[in-house]
Image 1 (cartoon, rainbow, N blue to C red):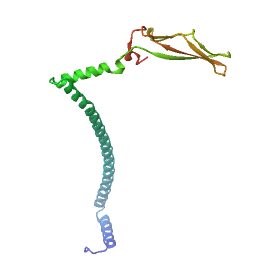
Image 2: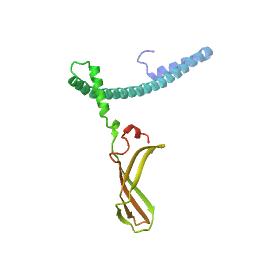
Image 3: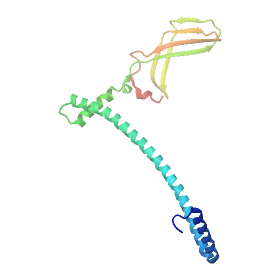
Image 4: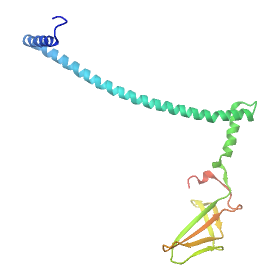
Length: 198
């Protein structure tokens, strides 16, 4: 058949040839069928695998891009932090090695860190509510108290007040309030880190 033979005719000729082969050489036809079916199955499985691999690669590509953006951001942040330090170190300690001058700058900044400064004073407002119908609305200038902050059995900070206030809430309760301060001659100042896990 020529190249211009209609597709239907060519298909019909192929089917006729297949049936002739089936009549004359059945075992060869079975092998041919198995080969065609097997090739089709392998192609379909390969197609699904390629699709799965493509999705995996896309996911890995997205994660890689995200990691790259994060690294770029961290790198930029690091540059913005280190560059001023290097400039400051070179300005304040001219002639010294950059590592030595940087250590001096970092040590000074660590000492100035507010979280590492000692607590020299403290104020605490304490509110206490008690069930009572008493008609209280007063400033008690001679009735104060103490408040102590501790960790375990150790006292960390003590504050006191010589006055307090009382007020009837109108709901069968009286609310007492006091403002407690740590005097300058109070407990030895404590570093912030001692309070971090109270």
